[in-house]
Length: 67
View 1 (cartoon, one colour):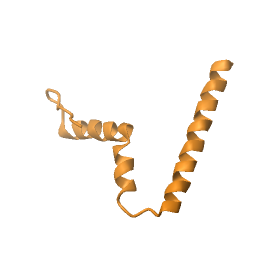
View 2: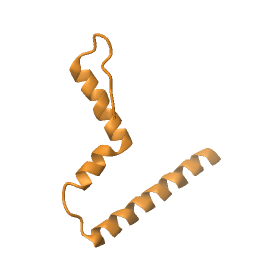
View 3: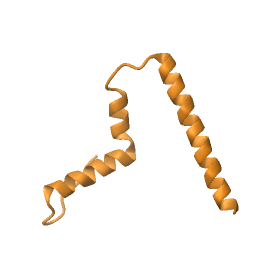
View 4: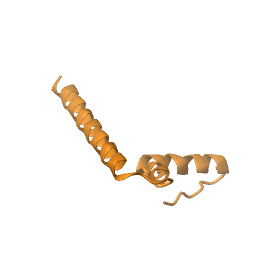
């Protein structure tokens, strides 16, 4: 991932843009997940929760479009 500083842009603002990009891409979440060992049973449970969450979001979006 690469972020170029714009002309006369403070470094803090450039870093903020980089952090926002990393969060949107899911890089930060992936790093935190690999920071410690996750048991296979915990991994299955997490993936199941993520699937259910994605299904609910899709359903909500479909319901809003139907209205």
